[in-house]
Length: 184
Image 1 (cartoon, rainbow, N blue to C red):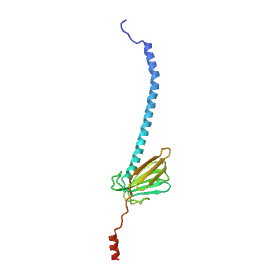
Image 2: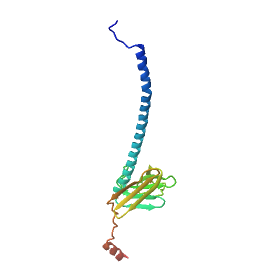
Image 3: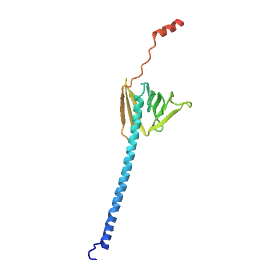
Image 4: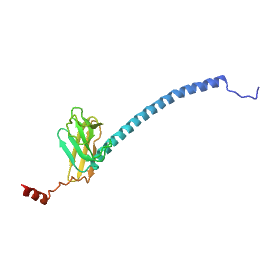
């Protein structure tokens, strides 16, 4: 039996004790990394949702025929009377971005030929966009639109859309007016 080498009982006990000292800190480190990954995933998911909301607003304006109304009071209300960017498959839908004053929540409404405030006979879709709004403002020059968004404890979001021309007003034809005058 002299040729066989084996671990002694003391060597086995020492190795078990060393593993017992190393495993708890490794477990805590693994748990900390898991929590960190969960927070990072939550942050990335939230940023992705924010980017989709901004993209939707951008495409609503960009896909419009230029017939856009901006009402300013405590918060701005942006209504796009005809846009091809429908989230619900509507043709030439009307979209409004409105901040609910009492809740400071930005919502997106979409439907066909509706006016705000809504009447009961109209069907529209309402989507929550952002909460805790401090600022929602829209500025329009001849063909450019600037949008400013600010939420509580968040960095402001600003973007511009260029080349959104207002629809030209139809001119009355002189021949038609003359013809109507002759009938009277």
